Image (cartoon, rainbow, N blue to C red; front, side):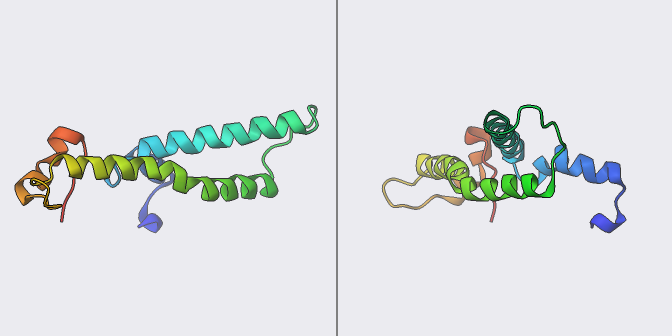
Length: 115
């Protein structure tokens, strides 16, 4: 739990340790960073160029709102990749995947499927 972790441990889990739990974490972090920087650039272009204030609550809330509204499109890429990985190991045209092929999928596609 977070309550038993130091600040350094929490930062490690957020920045790199989470790959153990979710293989797409690095790509997700990159997408979040790119989206945030794009929103900040748009704000600078349409706002006061001399206003160099730090992120206020409104700005952070706007980034969170935009991330929420765009996440489905981003995650769809991963879903299609996962679907293709399963289709690639489908048993004939049955729509089924043999368990040995299901569990061996990580070696061929990078997806570590489990039951």
